[in-house]
Length: 301
Image 1 (cartoon, one colour):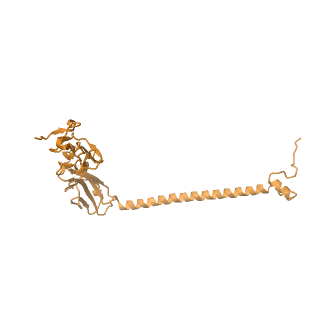
Image 2 (cartoon, rainbow, N blue to C red):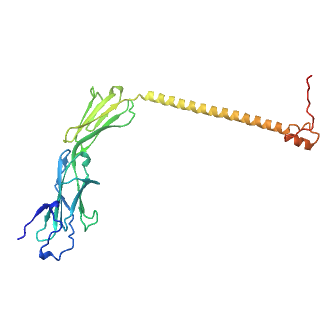
Image 3 (cartoon, rainbow, N blue to C red):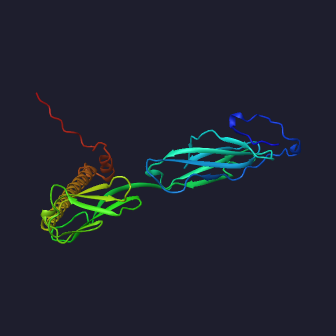
């Protein structure tokens, strides 16, 4: 009578005799595609998840590897069981993970390693679903809220599930008149300076504590903004005018310099030609030769 055996990989003998009925079956047994179990529904952030991967029909016993994305995971030692009536083995592996919000929608992979397979030939993936409280931020309608305009702040929360409750408040004060709440929106019918301050929004989805975001509202005076813009344009115009003036001055100085040096060249070129008795002597004098006229010398007694 055949009895099943269950052992860890370290207990599998390097060579075990096969029953006589299977002596002719010497070719490697190709393992089946792995099956992952143990994940049924989304898990709250911070809790543990245990996944089990199983592959059968391998000879010699296959090896199972776990991955989260491209990172190899540490798992318990494989459990190897012989298949009743067959010279093959079934292999089982378990891995335990503590999940965080970054694991939401992450893929956990179980891959089979065996001499009969190329790397990655047989693998299965299990997407994780993690429940976590919202990350909250407040988005303004515009970056320059102006006095007298309509305006709103939006409370945006990213969580699993999406936030369903929103609470607005103004830090160190009341929301004030002409301010209404519409779930994720805080609406200002007409902005004025009394609306300046820090606004808080809390968003909840029933998982853990509520997330909170804050925004500092500074209402701008449209008249001051317009005058400030005029001053900026005047400053830019003044700078451009100074640059143009400097360029013109440089052009005038450069022109006068070129004209002056051109006149000096012509004067040197004609030097000595006036006193030359003939054309040949004039050319020699222009090239730096002697003029043929004796230099006048003065003697002091």
